[in-house]
Length: 124
Image 1: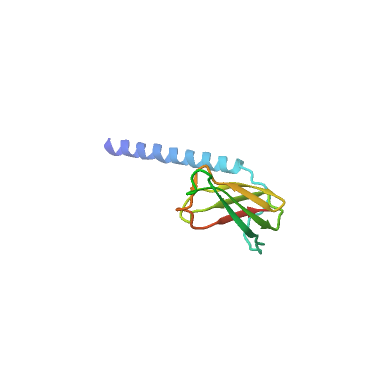
Image 2: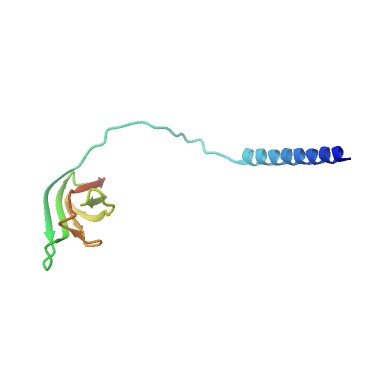
């Protein structure tokens, strides 16, 4: 009697596993994938040159940097961001007017003591 119950349980489990397998296969077969291709490759990245860098200090507290401005070449960029602390995570949004870039560094407030680099990311 015990053997028979085990055999029935095993049969039920196998039938359930088979049913789940068929359902998963049917679902996967119903998926469609577009005929596009994926791949990887490489290409040259043309760089930008930042020059004529000017830092504007806060007028009431010169230990704070309120703005950094520079000239960017080539001038055709849509997004420019700047970072002043090498280990930091704060990126400042910049405005680019024909290669004349200005980044407000007040939110969060940049300080002279913590500024140890000017890292610029530009996308054309």
